[in-house]
Amino acid sequence: MSRCATVSRSLDEPVSGTAATATTWLLLEQPGPWGVKALTSSHLAPALGRAVETAAAGTGVRVALIRRPGRHADPGTATLRQVYVGHTVPGNVWLHSATTRDPQRLLGLDFAALGAGDPRSFDAALGGRPHRGDPLALVCTNGKRDACCALLGRPLAAELAASGVHGVWEVTHLGGHRFSPTVLVLPYGYAYGRAEAHTVKEALRGIQEGRVVVEGCRGSSAWERPGQAAELAVRSTAAEYTAGTLSVVRTEGRAPRWEVTVTHTDGRCWRVTVAQGASLPPRPESCGATVLGSPARMDVVAVHELRTAALAS
Image (cartoon, rainbow, N blue to C red; front, top):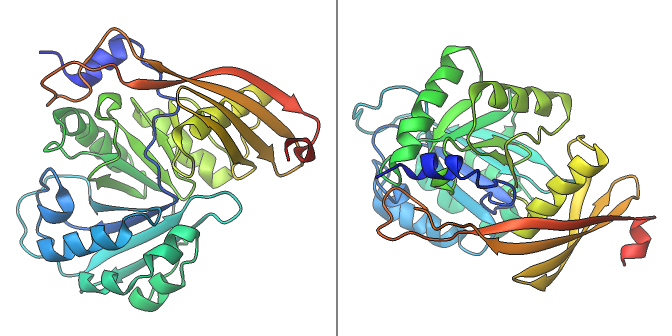
């Protein structure tokens, strides 16, 4: 049976509007093997993993484990761990980092505040501070969730690290196995599908220069999926690639059709019509799927620029 990523690529399934949704990402370093549900099936204490999952539920915070690229022999318990938290909503984008020997400190976080864009509990609980290093490239590599993530993601992570790219980590889950290799770039939270090394390098270079690369982009995790597709369509239509300038301020309607309002920091405004379609013919949505599916796709039907953002109110 063909791998899910191979089938998706051969059918030219669009990637726009397929990113995981999270206003804030919390990342904890956990070396060694990962299971299907890594927070409770790794060397991280399962009780802690369940407690963190429970605390994050419904807050906009998505929790994932990360590890350095390379071989992952069983090293036992990690001593000093890297921790990141990043907020992705334009107007308040930030990335903070810390190290800890005691991951139980994550239970001291105010997850609701983190999801809303307030990093103070992270800094207080973990001694965190604004991250001054390179942006992060998180490559999904968890083969226990889907074989394509390991077969395609791990070589990409290794290639990026070997070529001197800083900020590269393997990550447990970004969603969308069939778009492997999948990559998330922080702090702005744009996800990429069918990523190649040159695309990731350009995306990281773009973030350092304050711009967004739309090639292979699945969308920003700050928005729900119709908003992801709408924002990318506005960027392409208006040739507006500066990071942090566009916001999804309103999404009206429900599946299968939405009217999405996207505004610019300079006052411009667009009304974008997004329709939900079904990807045909049916295909495996993951390598472990026992039946074929027709995953939802976000199709941009129209992009209309309004004269000012005030017209959208």
